[in-house]
Length: 136
Picture 1: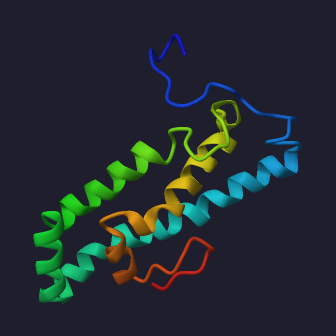
Picture 2: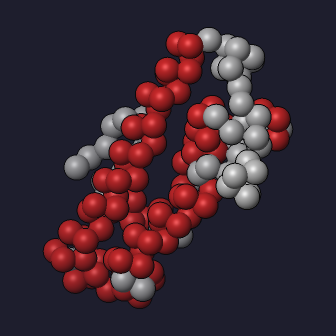
């Protein structure tokens, strides 16, 4: 922490406690990363196709979000600001700074996606959920 000057979220690292009781649990957490990122990446990759192929959607994205590049930036900004901040845990100690804490924050961001102004764009690009299934 002293080397980077600032720390976001809890500095607790969990290994061998109730949050990450064993190595298999830890490995499983890494497997969740793709389930979170794949739908986000798919949406970001498909926004440009939406605006290129449909004038109505192009107007919707231009008017509502300032264009597809700004929309991409806004989604990424919101994700990186909130998905790794230690939110979503029962308490600050349980948030942790290890993958457990970051995944808790990321899943917390995912659980609030429907409340985000850009959620309709996720749906328009084929987003169906974070369970590993989404349309291309």
